[in-house]
Length: 414
Image (cartoon, rainbow, N blue to C red; front, top):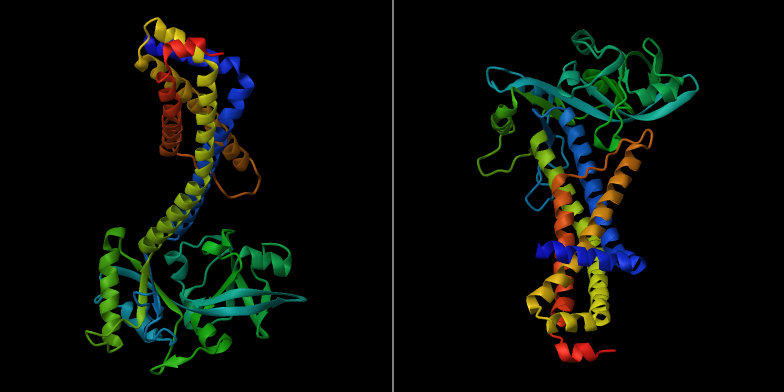
């Protein structure tokens, strides 16, 4: 009952000075809204990125030529193409690699596509028919490359929707002809639009048989008499077998490349799981950093709370003296002012939460904007907790000042 009575007194005091109370809460409102919005942006971006990476398959492994040392510097082989079609062939042997289901080579680079008077620069990748399965490619029209086209080195190409639109002004282009280095290629498929170009979009890409890319388009170098590849993708039998598949691939490549026991790998194996972990660590760190910067406004808001509570103690000196003369304990006075400070900060926190939800709804309502502002329960709890903490921390000194007033002196105060 005592707490309820003090709560009513606090509400009456705030209501009697609406303008002053509103301006006092403004710092808390801005601080909470800023922190929640920035955390929401960070978590939304992280969720979008993780979703995009996960959609490409959580069982995929990527083998790249060269190694990276612990200090992040390219090691031996970092500037040499050490992966070859021979490596691809032996890694494709299921008797030696029971936890690897598919192995896909890639050799690519940037090139120009021409159709009529139009041309566009794209990322061209030479690969095999299994690439679509390993990388979870979806087609809007037509089909992907076939095994016969790979073996016969046919002049066929699968392109992204942006490429189709740039060259022909429409996405439906199966059967049309494009030229690469003056050589005609027939479009056999168009990929579905994926967006998010910075995270693996194929909208501005093209795919051709790997033999064509190595021998006719890019003139790939040879290593130990075999065509090199820019990377190798492999699919593990299941998520649980990814580590086992990685070990099998590493052992085979070390043996094929003649590496001694104390030699570093001249290749690098990365998994989707490690990529997801790295992305999550980076986004979490950036979100925490930005959130900490935004939290400075909470400190400013807390100082405003302390200032107004000190003014309130001064204005109500006679009231405090009268209450103490009538038998109120110091704990009663302390509790009254602490509750008033808490009400101010919590009310400001609730308004800040409302504003952050409004910003989230506004972002979601923007058409063709593939981004979400994610406000989670732990962030809300943190916002309210920080608001309450500000109330206690910055309201404590004014409340203690109020308890130290001498009743007689307080009653004489003008």
